Image (cartoon, rainbow, N blue to C red; front, side, top):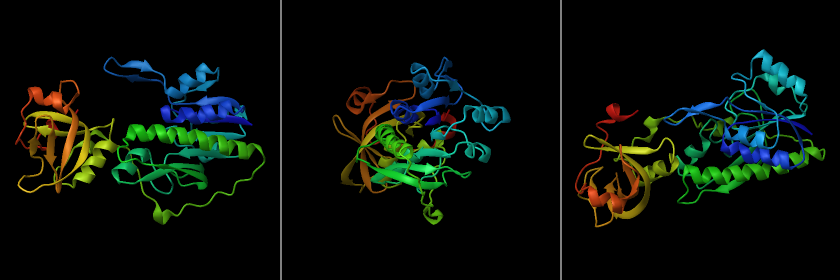
Length: 318
């Protein structure tokens, strides 16, 4: 089977690998253009490009795949299937109509929940205990196509967006191998329509989403810390300093005589009052300093009784 693959980040690599290792003919790999990364703005190739080049596959990096030149290029590749995973560009109907088997997308949620660009983060933010991968027959909408099959992935209590990403990427590879095997054996898929009434959105996240409001329940803040790890991250303010909260855990201690954001320190522990219970902070980082575990942080800082808040967010967010 002749396959064009479209994908960009780490998440997409196991999907491409499943197609390549399954013996299918990968006639082209489409990915986003290289972009500057880090403080030195070093031009860096996407993970999918690095994998594709390591396997000797042809790579295409159009800025707008919907432009006529790219569409004609795709037609010339004569794919039987376009396989998509976190590509980062919307495909036009003209592109969707090119392959005889259409375009199949491996989406990182159990659709119709979490349509959009950040499904992994949003399922943790919502406190879900299970998510998964949906193999979807693409249409012109945003993650609205019919569902071919799904695979469930449990969300552990201590999963972060990063750890769940890795589990889902592995599951996407497993489902890809199954879907391609069935398609190659002649199975005709009959995708199930999504129930739009059950649809939820997972829009792109920004740094502002990481600001902690301590008057919220501790469970919601804990999910925020996990769900936004390691980007965009969560943060608060201590006097005139921004504090990144990297790791935390729940406690069973109810807040009684403290205001939201008030700090309670032990010899090696630091708890912050939320709207109901205390949240224990396990690792954090002051602006301009290295990330450190709480016990090390407390050797040089004395926040006991201080109130963390959000007064400085407009000045400090960059």
